[in-house]
Length: 282
Image (tube, rainbow, N blue to C red; front, side, top):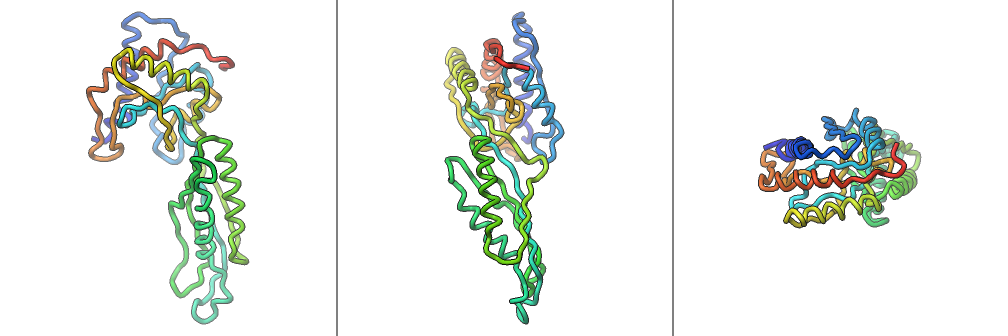
């Protein structure tokens, strides 16, 4: 049911992994912080500064989102943001004097088509026009219209490049005398989890440990954001998807593969034992 995979199983894994380390008397660490936040799924977040601060002060970030349905852990996530584009035109009667109008709806339509062409500008770049609104009636040249866009890229630098090009293309729409305003939604920005050398070292350790425990494991990249994107912003290496295997999140059929719980707890505990000091840690 809802919440079993995202995130109760991950919380369970974290508690029992720490308990296992305590049980065997492992104390070769300075600090383990088990951070649980409740606002990951909402647009306006309050835990971002906390995640960034704590991530910067630790040697590694291990995030307990569920493993992919095939058991993969996550070694890279896209950067993303939401942009709202608003067009301000001039209303007129569509039958009597349409030439006196300046259609905001037409401007937005052009922007949607033209910016959609930015998909794939670099590998992994995506632009999705998720919501549109505008106009008052079919017989009125619309004075106002807007659209809501999701932009993503594999690196923070690529996202900056994509946003800049999106703005340029949107402002160049061909309907004259229409004012275009582009704003980023507050709280929508999510940095990338980039597959740095530190992430690769953790991935290699996790794959080796999983092999010792008797199950296969490999890393995967995904377009969705996660808390690790903020916690690792300062270069702190990390892995995601270390929780038990599950799927169908946010729906009535959400599930956890119960046979994966104990092996993933063991993986997490043994991986924590191999964390090395990070150069430049705050």
